[in-house]
Length: 424
Image (cartoon, rainbow, N blue to C red; front, side, top):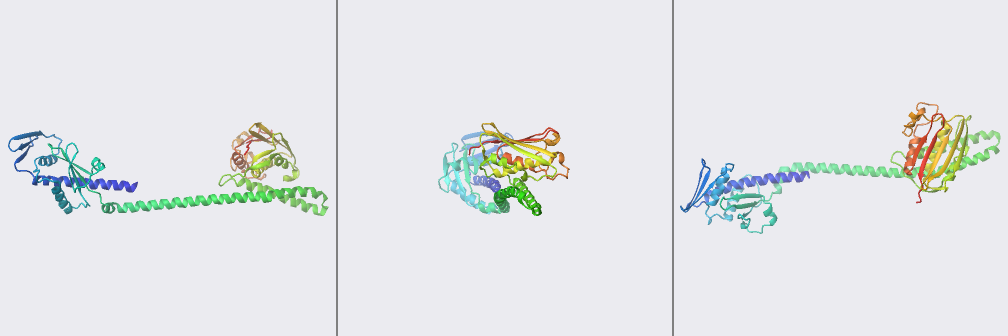
């Protein structure tokens, strides 16, 4: 667009110069072709022009005060020209001679003479003149007060002149366009590379969850069943190993939730048994708590179907985060109740309720903000970074669900999750 604008501007300037030069040359040409038997006079005081034809016929014209006098002379001389000598081929030769001596370069010149009704009287060089050229001529010069003829001059704008006048700006525009194109290409390549990295990261996270989470859970349950049968000298070693596996399981859950942060969340949805997933959370050996803390987890599953369509790995990590928060922010005796019901024909509602300390109304307003730990923001005695609920909301939203927290201070906390039932 910039180059086109420059071209149109330079082309307009060029044709304006050509038209001005041709008008000047036509005046001289008319003066040389004036018939001596005819007279043309102009009185500047009365602004009246007089045409005398063979000393008999007199035609008088009052000149408008706004009329350019030079243009008036040009048209007046045209009206008394010798029609036997004033031809387009003569004018063409005369113009070419003088234009070649001027400092205005041009390639070719086409002249067309039209009468007052815009019918073609003559063309030179003889060639077909298109209707488009007649509708928008490059130079339109009116000739004569009496005849009202029009001279159309066509002089193509030479590309060499355009390059000479605007070549530096064209090169600059091309360079800028090239730089922008390179930037767009680099930006596209970077975005594509980041998307590919995000895809590989998702595969990596799901591979860890699939390959490590289930075996570790099974090993914890197995060790729980055999620890009572292990001799006393080795029982402490077995308990330490089970504790390490519990820590590893919680670390996997944290990795899974934090995988939602950089490039959004991509779910790997499938049909799974939600009731079984919730029942697995009940086992006390899955949770690491202080020795003096007692807790009990119960599940009341009343939904119509035990199956749900979603990402079991992400949902399991979210539910573990809810229970972990209840264990951390409750007293020495913790009661956690998990309930699942059909809120309507298209949704299920899961509620995680504890008997903990509750959350103040001020902290509750920012409970889902990243790095916010509510009433325990500066409490170093309780481990945590304030990211669990932030990530949990991302997972629930990715399932097109909602999450809310009801927590009167001192009366426990209820986390309510509503998820749509999909039949896909």
